[in-house]
Image (cartoon, rainbow, N blue to C red; front, side, top):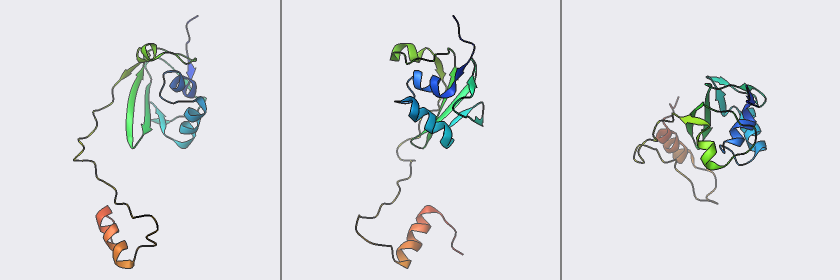
Length: 125
């Protein structure tokens, strides 16, 4: 029996984008999953040819559905279920490092806060 549609959370879990189905559902609720450019609810129907964007670790993964599955499948079969159109990640030099304060250092002083804001590109008014 060939499927005509599948739930977004079930498909994304089945093709191993998420470790558990509940993690897939949570990602949908948080707005990290988009289908054809629109935010997807967990129960939204997914069809062959739909574009799925999954946000993880600050980068989008762009996938085009080529086969529908509702059960978890092996890695080799999962790779056949989508076409990966994800752009290559930017070089490590271009990724800006977020400045971190030492634990227990307390609140930043006014001067330190201004320096942090300047690093982040915030406009001081």
